[in-house]
Length: 75
Length: 181
Image (tube, rainbow over all chains, first blue to last red; front, side):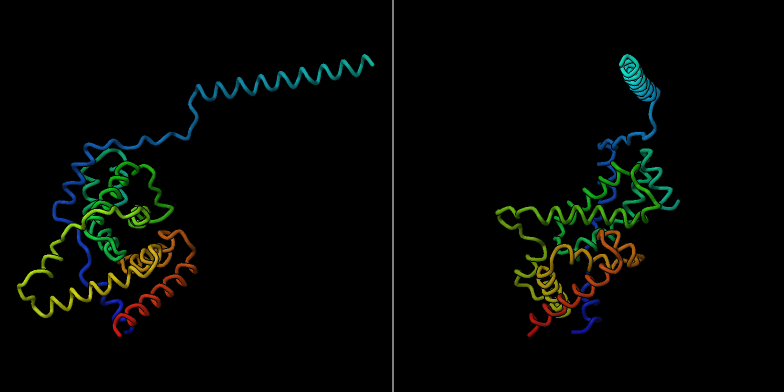
């Protein structure tokens, strides 16, 4: 058996779609909701939350530096 | 309208565009699943689930990662491998039309009989390969798919796909020759 024989075997009589397959799938699609793709861009509320978290973090850092500075001065 | 425009329209909920995609790809998907060793009922189930996933996730298609046919066949491959990995239910095997034809007393034309025997021989030989190798072999017979697309479907490098394909063909040849003796 050579490569041509294998090709002939694998290419012979391929499985085909039933005649009403496209119509059936289109009908099923009508009854199937599409997945909602999540937007990768951040919304205004997400930006506001991020800003607030970053602001609080910066404040705490400043407070820590200030306290450390005062403590070092007192010694 | 080309397939790229159809998939964009499908992502926006256009059923007609989706129908055109199914029509353009269904034969390739069924031929691929058939060569993977799935019977017609299982192939229909897998093809249906494949196209429904295309419908549901059309918005995720990215043409920069490969063509539409490659994307659809990747979904079909994953669905088929999942299905083939499930345990086969121990129910009575339904008698297909093909089986009825074989069991019938009516004589078959010689040519038809030979074709049928060859197909049975091929199915038996394909069963000797792993599902992943059957998928690789099957996708290599789909028109318009180059080795890069086949490698993308199989999730491996081009070099690995080439080597695996060669080995799968050799193994299939070996099984068919052993059966023939």
